[in-house]
Image (cartoon, rainbow, N blue to C red; front, side, top):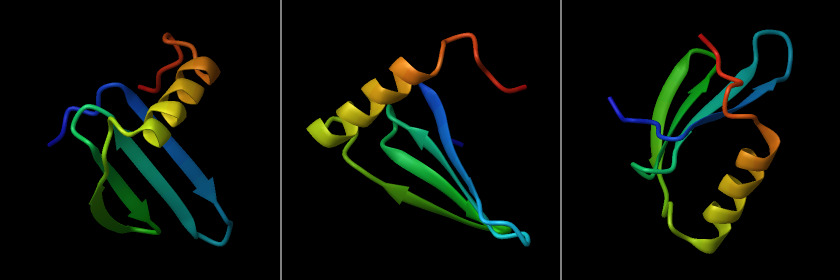
Length: 69
């Protein structure tokens, strides 16, 4: 189990049961990916300039109190 701090995810739904979800952990440098019932993990450099710019966009786009339960 990873910490997923801060907690962000990208959900893509292509219909007909085809979807992708990427739960991103910028602290542990990993992405939990689920695709139509299949699961995998990928790692990345959470401190890279590109990833930090994505994190900035997430923080600007999603309020801190907008969480799923």
